[in-house]
Image 1 (tube, each protein chain N blue to C red):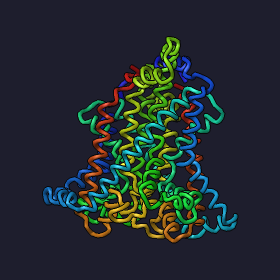
Image 2 (cartoon, rainbow over the protein chains, first blue to last red; image 1 turned 135 degrees about the horizontal axis):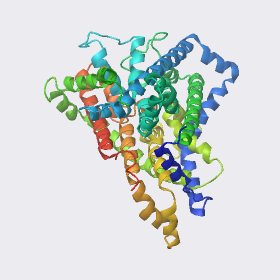
Image 3 (cartoon, each protein chain N blue to C red; image 1 turned 90 degrees about the vertical axis):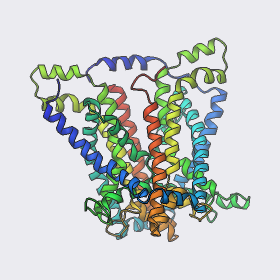
Image 4 (cartoon, rainbow over the protein chains, first blue to last red; image 1 turned 30 degrees about the vertical axis):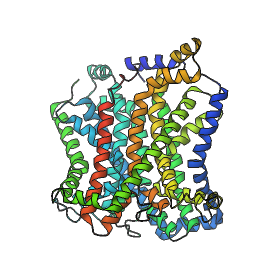
Amino acid sequence: MTATAPAAGRSVLRARPTREGALTPLSGLGLGVATTWFSLVVLIPLAAVVATSAGGGVSGFVDSVTSPQTRAAIVLTVGTALAVTALDVVMGTAIAWVLVRDRFRGRALLELLIDVPFALPTIVAGLVLLSLYGPDSPLGVDVANTRGAVFLAFAFVTLPFVVRTVQPVLEELDREVEEAAASLGASRLTTFRRVILPSLAPAIAAGAALSFARGVSEYGSLVLLSGNLPFRTEVTSVRILSSIENDNTAGAAAVATVLLMISLVVTVAIDVLQRRLVRRG
Amino acid sequence: MAEPRWFRLGLRAVVVVYLVLLVAWPLSLVAQRTFADGFDALLRVFEDPDVLHALRLTLVVAVVSVVLNTVFGVGISLLLVRHDFPGRRALNVLVDLPLAVSPIVVGLSLILVYGGRGGWFGPALESAGFQVIYATPGIVLATVFVALPLVVREVVPVLEEIGVEQERAAQTLGANAWQTFRRITLPSIRWAVLYGVVLSLARSLGEFGAVKVVSGNLLGETRTATLVVEEKYLNFDKGGAYATAFLLALIAVACIVVVTVLRPREGSDRA
């Protein structure tokens, strides 16, 4: 990218050493304790999910994942998460733009609203949405127990991600480059497409990946809102929960493994995108 | 180059309407319904011993989880940023994984390892008299799992930005590792640690799905505040559900306000 002033400042900072280098005996001990704890809480349990799903053999795994009800749940979850991610890309970029470039009274309040879905307990989020879009809606819009409810819940819980990844990049973007493009005769659309969008793209992609991962794994906000109707509004997480409750652990683990693979791919993708983001500065 | 006025106002209107419809209005309706009969619903919640027990349990679990995640988070951030070791990059990615894992999968994974019936370690632990699943330790584990990356994600960028010059200087002057951490590193990362703690607290108080799977949801024993909201709503005690939800929402919003007020504007948190 163009060498903008803040980017140059940042690369000087990065040129400073941040590492001490090899492990000392003390930090080696710390690493041992930390990885043991991390393994006990996260890695071993997740490995147990994968191991249990493999326990039923390949055919058991395939049967669990491709049963019509499970397939319907996975299609609904992934499809809705993709649609909501597309909405987040557009609205999230627009919101970030307004927060960075526009000045008006009440902007600080908007800033606060963005983070609400992140901090609100998911079961409360479901209840909150039900109050405006449920049977007692003052708007007369009742999406409870429909697929619209799944879309709505995903849109609510994924709201912060694109906004919060795009906002800092937009803040550092040098307006002089835009002005230069304009003075060279570029239209606003061309400036946006050729100058602004390429700088924002990695941030938008990272935010979109976070949104998608969150949507695919959502559970709590749907409990009161979507009715969990098989083949209609049942998402993958609910499907796994009902397998657990029916003591079908292998089936639950098989579907959970599919979700885990999605989580893993998305987490690695975000890491790669963020590295690109740092390099661009 | 200022954007044309119509564009700025139009975009502002779209964004404001979107956020009001999606967040502000629904949120205010919950407050309205909680106070529909004055303070009665809220007071009734505080008179219900089961709800009080749930609130106490939630608070204890959240505090324990936040302490564990803060110690782990600061430690692992220092290791990831300041040291080279095999597998560093992989660990860096894996630490973020809990944010992307479904809460139900978190619950399932813990049952598969710590469940008393057929878990990998569960039966051994239970015969030693230590029950994890369907008891408080399981709720703590689930809460630690879901909030694990939050402190790390706040602290790592700050550590990267401050560099090691001051720490090296301190060591040259004869400071030991603990003194260097206490006097040099900790003061520079304290705000980042604090944001991480507040975010973790909000997340820990509000965890629902993972806790639902591992807790067994036993009334007066392992039922947490978020489980009370579900149970009350499904049992047609909407007043109680709204009041408990309002309390939890209030805490969540308070956490965000604290973070927003404390967080200095971009670039000024290096001091």
